[in-house]
Amino acid sequence: MYKRIFLDYTYGLGRIYSREEIEKAKQSPSFEREYNLKYLGLIDNVFHTKDIESAIEKGRKYNPDIINGYAQKSMGIDPGFGSSAFGVVVTQFVDDQIQIMHAEEYQRPDFNQMLSIVLDDLYIRKFKKKIYNIFIDASNPSFIRALKIGIGESEEYEPLVERARKMKSDISNYMQVIPVSFSSEHKAMLGNCKMLLEKDGGYIAFNPKFDKLITSLS
Image (cartoon, rainbow, N blue to C red; front, side):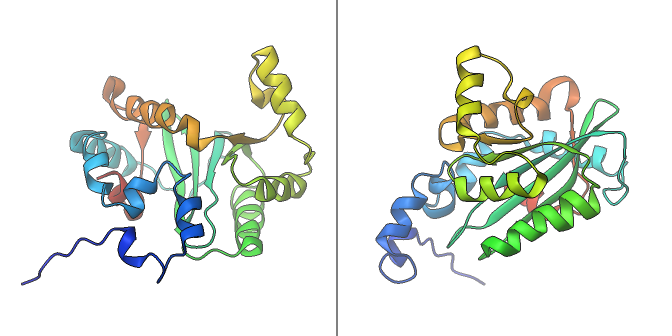
């Protein structure tokens, strides 16, 4: 019934994307996937269907709307602005499983709106300030500083990052909001995620309600 048409970013260059926007987008490790028609090929080569299905089955056994106040929690943020989506994931560690408690992407995000969602809606109201670490792409220092100020942490984080690097110590000993260079660490992050999905039957569980997350992995 349908004719499938593949249009990479070049068809929108000068129309829906400016050259400046594309050059900025190329700094992201997801550029080839999101702009250059390599989305499915990349994902299929990384995550196996059986591992995703296993994580979904585990996810049916917990309710992401019921928060365990004693479980260790982490938040991951990919702060896209402009033409990119803004992604937020929150996990909790229960019974040797990493349970996905929140996974959402926000289209055409506004800076203040996203700060309110991350701080007020999620960090304060839903998770009652029980999130231990917040990992965020280091390429957006303005949002990192705003987030640190919002939780009462020093916004001058660069010296602490450098100190942790020189001492080869865990940066979480110095701060709660942790900048991570997605551009240089994305391969290690992807490899770690693959290991957690596969090893010993998998340690990750995501409830079927997180359909966008499941689609992105499939």
